[in-house]
Length: 257
Image (cartoon, rainbow, N blue to C red; front, top):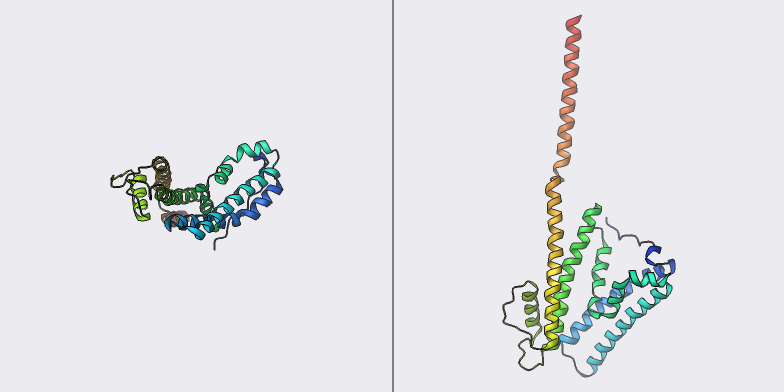
């Protein structure tokens, strides 16, 4: 039965301390849940095109989660030593705290902690990379589709006016198919399209490289199921040779007598 990976010890080489590590462990799952709530709330905010009270509720929820991530970053920074080293080695945490679109990435990290997928260290790393690659690609498509819908929905001359159209456009763009039936007309929408193109190429490359590495390794070492049979064959051959040697030796002694 698989169990979650044990929590890592603080790394002094990255400016981490026992206090900062305890804080990180205590806030890890609450922030992972907050990341999921953020994604759900933002999705409802955009797709529902909410107005009035519901717009206030969703906006306030998004703002509270934003503050949670920023406070978490500031507390960990305050508990670190030396702080300059921690800041230089935790730039990704700063980007995640500042840019809302990156917060759902915590869900991927949380998912990889729930179970151990492979037995060997190499396969474990590849499994995590594959999860991050596929998960990040899906999150990228989902989030950019939401952004595109938010930017384009009420723009003059825009043809992306539903979430279905936005998702279709995002899939076509990230796979470099680009049918051209939907085209962003706003500046923010085009910026989001460029980000999707670049991010899609990087993530697809990561997934392909991870799968290729796994296939090459499997081909080079042979299938695991064949290994026990090969060992058994060798053992049987060794036993047969030993029996034959004993028989020859016995016959030699009998002939000498």
